Image 1 (cartoon, one colour):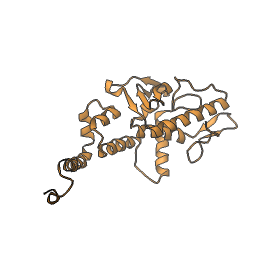
Image 2 (image 1 turned 60 degrees about the vertical axis):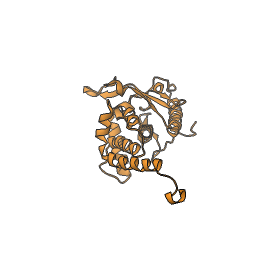
Image 3 (image 1 turned 45 degrees about the vertical axis):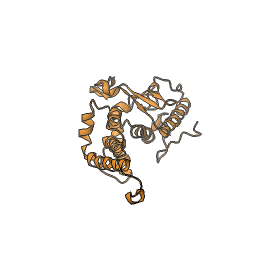
Image 4 (image 1 turned 135 degrees about the vertical axis):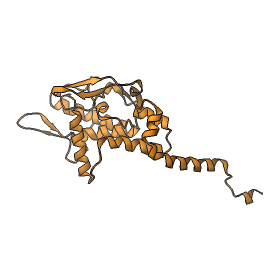
Amino acid sequence: MRESLRGNSPEGSTRIDPERGAPQSDINYEYKVSLATATARTRAEKRISNLALRWQDVDLLLLQVSVNRSLHQVKGGRTIFRQPKTEKSRRMIALTPSTATLLQEYHDSQNILRESLGYSKLTETDLVFCQYDGKPFLPNTVTHNWIKLVRRAGLSGVRLHDARHTHASLMLKRGIHPKIVQERLGHSSIQITLDTYSHVAPGLQQSAAETFDSIVLPKKPVSELV
């Protein structure tokens, strides 16, 4: 359990508005957790799937996340949940141990916050990333916060979706099989993954050639073997 409500964002995570009596949530911490979940497990998942996650979809013991729906904002500002477009989009994705630890700490801190405000503790059906009262973050709100984080880091022109591409590119460059990358991204076919990340292919070809050399060539010079 956390000893305070202060999160990992630069400003601390939550402030109380004395006039309204409700917290003005700084979503930096919440979305940092979401982004860590997206890039470390990766999902490199889209924001609409991240924001639809419930605690029942996250298995911190088996280190798995179930992707089974997405959140959308419709006309009038109302939010709805939809099923994935394809069967490939509905999938289980592995969590890293460090991400699972971060999510557990986040879960504990949210319970402390909710209890201090008179709300019940989180249940399995509650959203993972949401406002203090359980209402979902709007997709555009998350995007705007991402832009602030990028600017604070001294960068520009880095989109939220670029984190997804970066994750996939890094995995491919490290030799992760494209089929695994496809499954984590939720692409309907491996061809989409290969076409999207064709810029990584030259490096993969070189790595494959070097690996083949290391397999078939003797470890010692031929002269030493005679």
